[in-house]
Amino acid sequence: MKNNFEKLIKRISPVLKRITYKLNGHFAFFNDEDLFQEALVYLWQVFKDGKINDKTDSYILQGCYFHLKNYIRSINDKVKLISIETFKRNEEEGNQDEFLWLKDQKAEVFFEDLNSRLLCETINNNGLTEKEKEILRFYSQGLTTRDIGKQLGVSHVRVVKLTHRIREKCRKYRDGSQLN
Image (cartoon, rainbow, N blue to C red; front, top):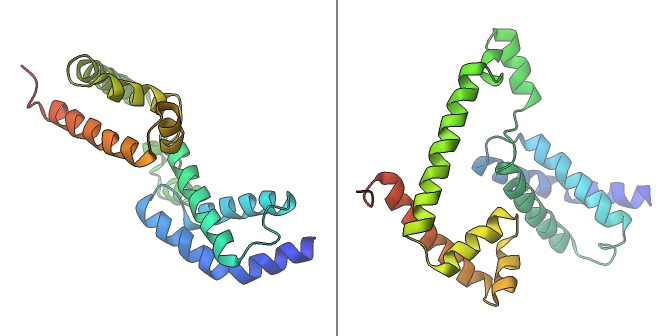
């Protein structure tokens, strides 16, 4: 079993590394190697469960791509990740303070969060339809676009379009064109 997994990894690694490089271009808070390791963990789990035994390399790589996109999406809003290499490099240069949460930074984050919440409340109470409010509630619960579509009985494409409309409304409020 281990030999089969090693053969699979050896066969698809070059393409998988290109995928992680491409994704890292959009999400710079991850290191290419971090994403590659996450893909390997995912592959090991699905390989061990026998879910990819009869699948083509293309299918497996596409599954890795979608897993990494979902992984990035779920991690992005929850934590701020830094590469250990970046931290070590800054520590050697004496710049590690930017990675530590100091009291002033906590206060700044608190006020930014408060401002964001007030803006969200203003938008929610003045500019969104009931369906748009429902979509925001589902997103806040951590549902994916497809899950939201299933909950609402609409396609995920419709959810994406409504989400775009929500973003446009938020942008108008954020820029101040709808205030006062």
